[in-house]
Amino acid sequence: RSRAVRRVVPGALFASVALVGLFVRRGSDPNESIASVPGQDGSKRLLKMLGSPFEGMWRTCAVGGGTCHCIGTLVFSDMIGDPVREINSHGDMMCTAEALGAPEGLGPRVCWCQDGVLWGDEVRKGLASLIKQGLTPRVELASDEAQEPDCSVESDGLWYGCVTMSRRWDTTVVPQVMARAAPAEEQLDMALRKLDACRRLAPQSSMRILGVRSSSGGDVVEMPVKAANVCSMVYRPDEGAM
Image (cartoon, rainbow, N blue to C red; front, side):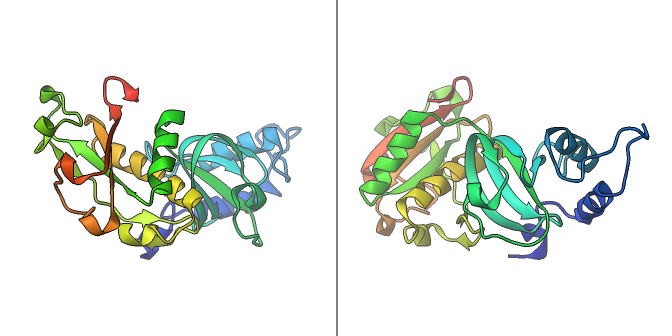
């Protein structure tokens, strides 16, 4: 991955400077110190200092040891923005290596959130079922909402595949065909993050998932619904997650 992609935010070296200052700096009120160990109040002050890296895209949600509230994609990184863990989050998560299953490392850590959709139990169970059957979840976006696209044969031609590279928990980029090598739990997490990534690409488009065999051209631009083993609508812009 390029340096630009690997860094959560370019120029985030400011964040490390801010954290170093955390141990020596005091607020405008000389009687109010910024906590050297990020407790609840100290974390809030630090996050205010760090700000949001990409407005509308990534936001700092916790420093190491704090609680990150994130519905979407959560990245656990070092202070200069190099990610060490990327997961789908659907609520409060402790910003620690142990809680996120990340390797322990020296130095302070930060959690970032890219807001997404709260995919409900039905979507999660449906994806888990596809993966258990050995199927690859193919995410598709609708090209014309006026025709009310769905899973019927009549909607063929209104859908196109959201072809994106996937990232494993350790942030390694892998093609769709290689995602099958990951454990089932990780495949589910990757699929949920892909749903969020595709929705960000086309927020006003409906989305559906086709369950396909890896050998059946899951990355082609268009695929007739009959070529899939399973089809399920998962998102409409006027309804949200289904």
